[in-house]
Length: 358
Image (tube, rainbow, N blue to C red):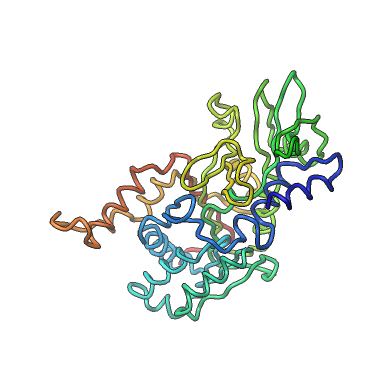
């Protein structure tokens, strides 16, 4: 990857690339990008954990909630998971329905969309027992979508541009090479799309403030929203509201790397071997939804959403004699999702279009 990055930069205008181009290369270059390589990325053997890795509780709660929505609003029994990773969440949802919602299980269509060929292969191996599952790499294979479209920690993994305000001037942060090392350089902001985003979102940086600009997030959301004819669009991710972005604690932005379960602030380290992520702009998605005819149904912290969706019903009586019993492990998983290390900035945004009560 280091050799590929040097060639990419040396062949670019002014021998520099935007942070968006850097992230696109180190995360998504076929076969050598972080998400495209055949290796464990999530869990103990990977670089980070998600809510999905805390047992099967997260998937069971979503499955129960999805079943309620399909019945309550007469939705077609179709689930479309965007950015579906290794397929564990789909497995947990379908396994719950096979146990508890057999009629829904028999008629549901579950579509997975993920651009990583490695992820697609893992999905197929994990979900081979479920014939109602289909696999794909691009959203464009579906001209229109009806049902429940959802993502879990998708938008935070998309490449972003990075900007900063210094001496009253707006600058864009680029990546170049000096003494064989990847380094940052800054140039006056000239990207019209970034400027348009700042204007449309009414963003005005303070002196010394840095911020990530999620143009790919907006493009993907618009692509999704334009294809949904009726149903629900559910976004589960971590991010800030406009008010939170203005807080001094966030003045250096949110772009981070995760390498072997360690947070790395220098995102130019370990190219292709480290996960890169940034907090998303939730209020932007809320405004975009209105443009596409969506109604906001809920916007909650993840913990509050899980309680509302029935996670407490998953708790079971436990005599405490065996800490490794399935009951004990599930109860611990519930506690970790509600009071553990999962940030208050994990949110669930629920938007609807054309819903009718059953």
